[in-house]
Image 1 (cartoon, one colour):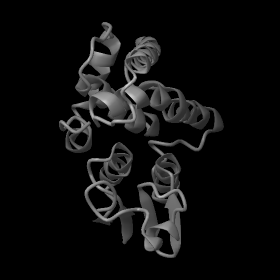
Image 2: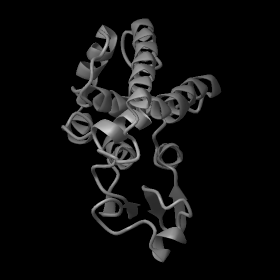
Image 3: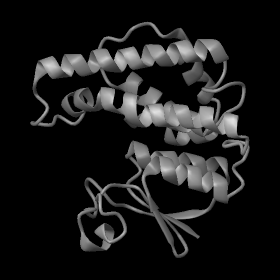
Length: 207
């Protein structure tokens, strides 16, 4: 039985939960993180020195870093339809997973901490506005990519890239600030919302 350590309102934990539903994988989950057991506890630190959620435990195997975990699950549990073995197809999926983890994730960080988390360390309005501008710019890049595919992130088929991007799209829509018109992002959001697992873990009101 797989075990996932992390709270369900974490965007990174929800990547795993969404994928498990897509692959019909059974798992146990323990609440860790904000509002629950602290990942700074020694028990957690021995498994992940970064003190971040999620952690995946698969028998004697332990793994942290959400994007690494979803790749592992797809590789280990017959997820070839979401993460093909063809090198070029996989590279395109990895490209957008990594783009989300670096460019997109970094763009929203300051604005999210100010607007949603109400962090006292993120009160510089110039940095808030710069973060919002960068976030909107990233979403316009996403809109142009989706204009090309007219479907999912890398083409006609749903893939791992859509799990990480789909949750990010939900976050953008739920964070209140002025947004540019991104019709292809809206179409993509509607397309993902036809998937039961996205309605459960993505389009569910959680930011």
